[in-house]
Amino acid sequence: MAVMGHVSLVGAGPGDPGLLTRTAIARLRAADVVLFDALIDERILKYARRAQRFFVGKRAGRHAMTQTAINAVMIRAARRGRRVVRLKGGDPFVFGRGGEEALALRHAGVPYDVVPGVTNAVAAPALAGIPVTHRGLASAFLVVSGHDEEAFASAIAGLEPNGVTVVVLMGLGRSAAIASRLIDRGWSRGTPVAIVVDASRSRQRTWRGTLDQLALDSVEWDARSAGTIVIGAVAALAAAAPAASASAVTRALGGHHVRG
Image 1 (tube, rainbow, N blue to C red):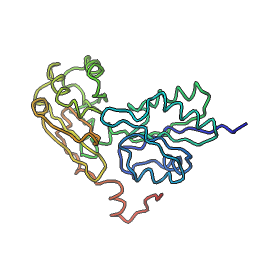
Image 2 (cartoon, rainbow, N blue to C red):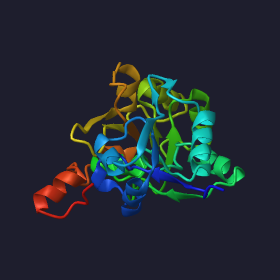
Image 3 (cartoon, helix red, strand yellow):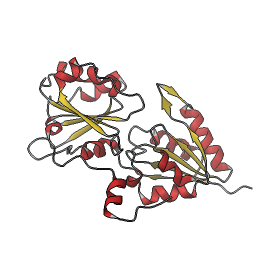
């Protein structure tokens, strides 16, 4: 009888390999199979040199593999004794369907663990010098998905206008509609907004404006980019200069970056 393998649900962080955890790197190096999502930096995949690698993400609204199929591949590979890494951007349990996959693995009797990653909901604003909470401005923040209009409307329905920082993931394509929805809910048109695109990568950039500007402007974004929308008074802050990538800082300091 074949020895049962193992599945690791691994968070890849916002993009820069320097922001991976040591445990994430160890899982990748030991992996026989890696199933990875869109927007995973190729430098991260180099840690899994001995593994078979399969792209299972979504591009232009189309899934390379259905969630049911992904679950089946993980379970089948583990039952054949393989060490599987399910690699996700950010954290696997923040809008990554990691919970669904964990339940599927548990139901199938497959051993698994979860390796948390740095979520873009906090990392992207921080890398642009924006704290999601700040004394006197915001004592709480809400993280919400922006790609589903009904889900977004439900999430903000009970919020006091301008009461908390709202961080929207997966909302670039609906940014104007999101701004209009908040204005309709009573949020001030002058509420500061920042959009951080490709956080932690060399091409990181930040758009700053107001809800009114976002609702009126037709801002087009590259579909290949990852974007995080920050709405609230903190978006006007620049508590720190936009950070260089972790890898760039390591090189500049002459430190010892973990190598693949």
